[in-house]
Amino acid sequence: MKVSVSTKGKPTITLDFPGKSATDVTIRDVKAGVTNKYPQFYATRQRLGLPTAAEKKPTPLTDESKTLADYGVTDGAALRLKDLGPQVGYRWLYIWEYAGPIFINPLLLVLSRKIYGDYEPSSLQLTIRNLIVVHFIKREFESIFVHKFSRPSVPLSFVFRNCAYYWGITGVLIGLTLYRPAYGAEALKDSILNSPNWIRFWTVFILINEALNLNTHLHQATLRVAPGEPRKYPTGFGFQWIVCANYFFETMGVLGMVIMTGGDIGSIVYIAIASYFMSTWAIGKYRRYKKEQDPKVFPGKRWIVYPPFL
Image (cartoon, rainbow, N blue to C red; front, side, top):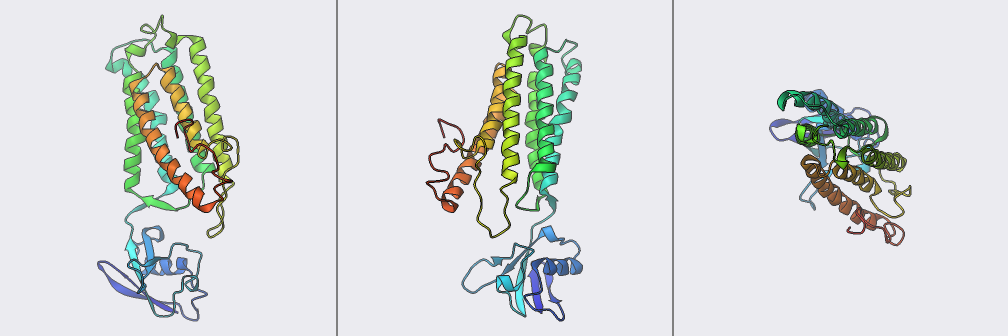
């Protein structure tokens, strides 16, 4: 079995698999052959395609476990390779982007006394710091042990983009707007924002939503199926009312922080951006479910993500 592989800016290479037929050679084997010729093109950086006369774009050969025969590739076929650029593992993307707020928030609370002058932090500030750290430790746990990813990698540039958002908004912005004397113990001495009952109520509210969000992720992790098999729809707690219950509980937790702080500007910016993206993703998932499932069963009459608005 022989195939040729061409890519922009490189000579066409021929890969020979002696004694094997198209039913024996997998896409993974072809990618390994390309890497052997051009080490900079590691497997996740490659997108192989099969040009056809009827299609303008090559048919993507995405499943590495499938054979050439599965995609209709015959002996002597010419494949095209698209360089996806430097890649990073999907799991590592999440680990990096969530790590920032865990360290930035405690650091900025300490540095705020040097930036604004010495003041006594309030119970509100200390509690919010702890809740943010717990939230992102939970996300790290989910990224490492719970989430299953449909793609092995993403462009390296995504790390800088996503870190700019999480480190910048939930780290630096919230740190600068919340960890300052205006939210300190003296300033909030007679304010409900520093009342033990107020802080206790919203802390419990936030932690309940964190737990419910974790529960949805644990349930969703059980739904992953092998490529080509019918996709399952979620049925765990919350999904009987809302298509994307995981996004709903996530947003409720952040909303609790916004209310708890009396409308801290950094928290408002965070929930505004987050809810926009989550509603966009939820609408996309809703449309996909309607195509892939019996729409009367799922999504049925469920809200998409934010009842009673969406």
